[in-house]
Every structure is written in structure tokens, then in C-alpha cells.
Image 1: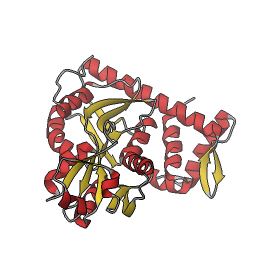
Image 2: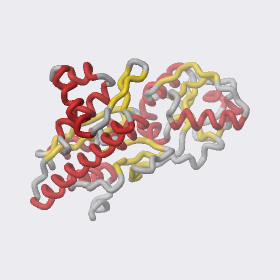
Image 3: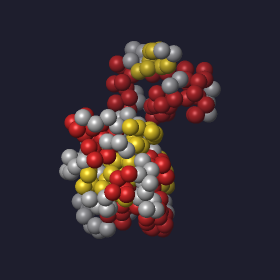
Image 4: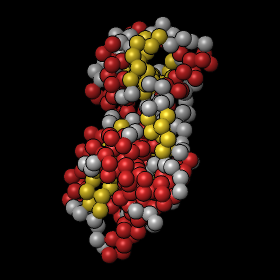
Length: 305
């Protein structure tokens, strides 16, 4: 029999990587948490965890348990959301992921309206980079997220909020900024002697830039790697370097970047660097989530059933 407290306990161990760390997060004793694990394992007839390199890792049984637990939690949340919508009672909690670079813009527009319109709904925010937010949506750690994406996960829905091709942003003291006017198109051969600020491995902009550099036979001169788009953008501006920036991020931040200039990058045309509202497939969208989308997009009523 599925026990929701047991589910939360196992999920905490997976997130924290150990029973000790999870027990501190849950404010329960380590022996009590270990006993919970044993109870679930006895019920399933197989171990949930194995130790790999000093860290707990899920067994195949553990992975199956986690997948089933996430579906059960989804069903429970959907049931309560549908009942509340039917009764006209807008209560609950919205766990919303959002990229740090878009957080100020969206929250400025949404938060006062949301708290006034849906006072019974608690809004819990999780800031992070897009790949991490996609994982959190997929694994049920958040209900939905605003994020940038190129390679979309099959189990998720992506509702377009804003589009825009990547922009090669150049600091005012960079060589290309002094040679070409803003808005032009450049190739990587044109900037092969410039310094670059790049995203860390795994980010879409890093993947695209490296692919284009390989195709052009250009070796990137990287001066900084970061997980933060905001940090990368402003570091490039201050250091006279170049940064391949998602179009929506450049549109939002260009007013704060002084004399930085933006160029279209040849061969990057058509790259889908859009901004999306991401949910799991087949997930019920409560009325307050539809209201949130209407305010963010300005497309009132489009999200109604």
C-alpha cells in the first residue's frame, strides 16, 4: 500500500544522496528514516538503494518505485485541483520553476496580480537554469516551469511564451564591436580572434556554439565558463568578450548592458531558442495556472478548455 509519507521520505533520500542528509532536511531522526526505508523494502520484497562510490543510488526496484510514486502524486494533485475547480474553491500550492534571468520580469508582472486574484494559492518558487528546471518538471519536483529549451524532453509539454534566435553579444571594448554596427550578421571566422564567455557543459547555447565552431574549424578562446546566463552576459560586456545569448534574455537585458552590441550569428539562424512554459504531459492545468499563463502571455482565454 502506497504511503505518502514514505514517498516523501524516499524522495528526500534520493535528492540529498544519503539518509543522514535527508533526515536533517525532514527534521526526523536517522534511525526513524532508516526504519521507513526498511518498511518500504519489506513491502516491495527488494532493496531500494545500493551504495555506489560512497553515495546511495537507486536500484532498479527503487527506480520503479520512484516512477510510480511520481505518478501517484500527480494523480493526487490533479484530483484535488479538479475538485477545487468544480467547487470554485481556488486553494492549494503552485510549485513554479523559473530561470533567474527571467524571474524579475515575470514576477514584477505576475506576483501582485496572482496574490490578489488567488489568495488561497501559495506560490512557491524554484530558481535555476533551464536544464535543471526541465529535470525538476519531469521528476515532479515542480508543477511547471518557465525556461529556455532546444532539445525537448518527450514526456513534457512546451507552451511557447516568447521566441527569438540567439544573439552574439559583444562587449563595447571587443574588436568586433568597433568594426561593425549593431544588428549585422557575423560568422565565427569574423570573430575567431575574440575571447568568449560560455555556458557550462550541458547548456544549449554551449552545445550550439561548439557545434558551429567545429563546423567552421574555429578554436574558441574561452575566458570564462558559468552556469548563469545573467553572469555570462554581464561578464562578456565588462570584459570585452563575446557571448552567445538566448534571444529572449538579450531582449530583456539589453537596456542594462551599456554600449554592448548584438549580432546575428551566421549558421545559427533558425535555432529554436524560445522561452516556454513547461509542464508534464497529460497534467491537469488548474484554473489559477491558466490565469497565470494569460497574464504572462497577454493571450486571455487561450488556455481555457
